[in-house]
Length: 311
Ligand code: PXG
Image: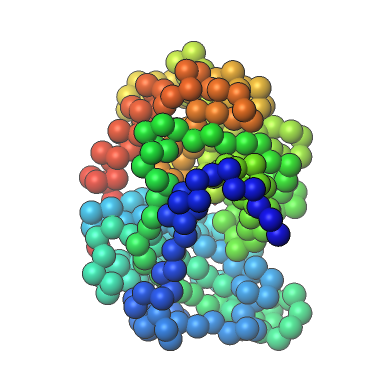
């Protein structure tokens, strides 16, 4: 497959990492094992069918950001797919912290995954007697700093966000193929992220980020009923808007609303708060990160250092 390389090649390589070659301790089904030993079965239904749920969590300066909210979302995702949680909330909290401690990390990306576990071939989840769980705490590479300084140019991709009747966007499941198709299309257009529309043509979210615009002094974001994940960073931005006194509302959003917005930014545990200055070739606002976006980003960076669960 040939992908157009409009993006500086270095941008992509900076985003590529191979954490599995670095020695680290992984929590896997009851014990901490070396990464070289951390293996799941080819009969795991998480692998065979994408049957499982996960969280992507951040550790900042020894504090896990909004751990309770992530664990709650994980529990809700598991409940929605009728997956038995292998640990209590208290156990998961401790195991997540311990994974960071075992690896001597103070700043990290934590991936917590629960799969349906090992079973015979066949979709039926009852073929899998025991769910499997693993927790990886690894270093994270963010978008290159220049994109926080200058803003991203993104595109709308043809692949639509899966509708809520098929798979509610609120479930953070291991089925990311829809988003991956969006990511591939973004790269073909030379962009690092992409707007995904829902089946009705309204803006849902990006492939791994929520989307916000600022219009005439109000922050606006699509509601989760339009196909947006209830992002933990999104919730944080809602709190920040109240803190800094900027009105915020959830609303249906079309591409037009973004093209004609004064500012646009994306949020996610990986991306944090990142400005967008162009969509589909249209310059947004003045073509540079807007003042409200910068205030939100500054407030976010303050919060992550003081909020959180000490490991
Ligand atoms: N929408 C989707 C589809 C996501 O996957 C978000 C929104 C933002 O949610 P949070 O809770 O993170 O604010 C996500 C999150 C990765 C990675 O490994 C993906 C996410 C977060 C962190 C890392 O690519 N997606």
